[in-house]
Length: 261
Ligand code: ADP
Ligand code: MG
Image (cartoon, rainbow, N blue to C red):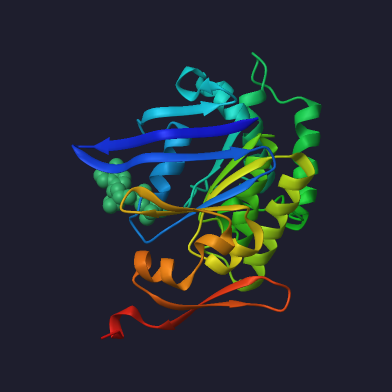
C-alpha cells in the first residue's frame, strides 16, 4: 500500500496555491511536510483527502485517487485535521465509533466487531478514563488523542495528520508522537503529517519535505533537510542545529528574525 503524488497542483480563483508536488509514502513510513505559514502544507494534505480539487497524478496503490469512491478512500485513508470539530453532547466513545462509518454494512449499524475495535483503540491510546465524557469538555491534549483514536478506529492504511502536536504541551506532544510511531510500526500504517516542530520531526519521521511558496524545495531524511542554512533560506530564521548525545537533531532558534539586521 503506498501513496504517490506526481506533479500535483491546486489552483483556486486563478491563484496557484501549490504546484509540481511530488511525494510518496510507503507502508509503515512516516513522511512530514514542513515550511513557513501559508506555504501550502495543509493544501497538500487536503489534496490527498480529495477535500480540494487537484491536478496531476495522485495514486493510491497504483490507482488514481479520483477513481476511488469516497467510501473506499475513507476505508484506506484517515485524516486528523488541525482543528477538528468536536460535536457537543457526544461521548468520546461515540465519537471514536464514527471512525467505523466507512466500514459499516448496508444497514449502517455497528457490529460487536466494530465495538471491539473501538475498545481496542481506546485502550491503545490510553483514553479509557474519559471515554464516557462529552468530547467537547476535553482538554486540547485529551481531545487530540480522541481524534487520533477516531482516525485509527477507521483502520486506515494511511494516516494524514495536520500539525498533530501544535496545540499540545511538551509531554503530550511527545506522547502523541510516540503513539503514532508505535502504531505505524505495529500495523505498517503510512503516515503523512505536517508540522512546525522540527526537533520532534527529526526524532520520528523518515522523510521531510520542505514546502515554500507552494513548491517542495527540499526533500530527504531529517539530517539532510534540517540544516541551519536551508532553514535560514526558507524560514528567514536564524537557527542553530545541534546534535544531542543520542544522535537526535535539535533545531534551536538563535535570534528573532525580526531583530536581525
Ligand atoms: P500552510 O498549511 O502551509 O500554512 P495552506 O495550505 O493552508 O498553508 O495555504 C497556502 C496558501 O493558500 C495560503 O496563502 C492560503 O491563504 C491559501 N489558501 C488556502 N486555501 C485557500 C482557499 N480555499 N482559497 C484561497 N486561498 C487559499
Ligand atoms: Mg496549515
